[in-house]
Image (cartoon, rainbow, N blue to C red; front, side):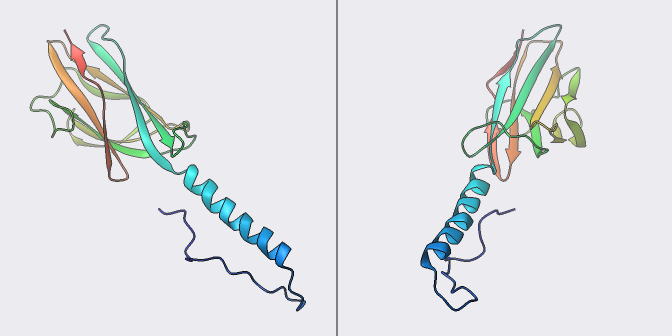
Length: 158
């Protein structure tokens, strides 16, 4: 969903009274430009992914949705997430033995059992996935947002 204005220019409009007030017309149009720039800066633009340490065969992976200025956003966002055997890869060949659960956010759809999910963040733009694996294995979490792909560091189980 675009937040940019639908016009390609900003018209300096003549006031209804018939008197041209260029100063006011300029200020009004600058307000429109400022609003468009603010909307663009607050648009969802990135995912910051952090991988926790393994504990009791579980690794927590946190996704924080960010705006164009790389500031954390507040608001609900959907993202598609999947595990792969390589960074930026297709779904992993074998799902983790204990599965994948959403511990922060809401699971909207499980596309492939314990491999690919569509998730809604919490109101702070955060998604936390708990990945459980009993054996020695390495996964990567890939996340797609607005057609752009993000990938975690290696998620290592020993």
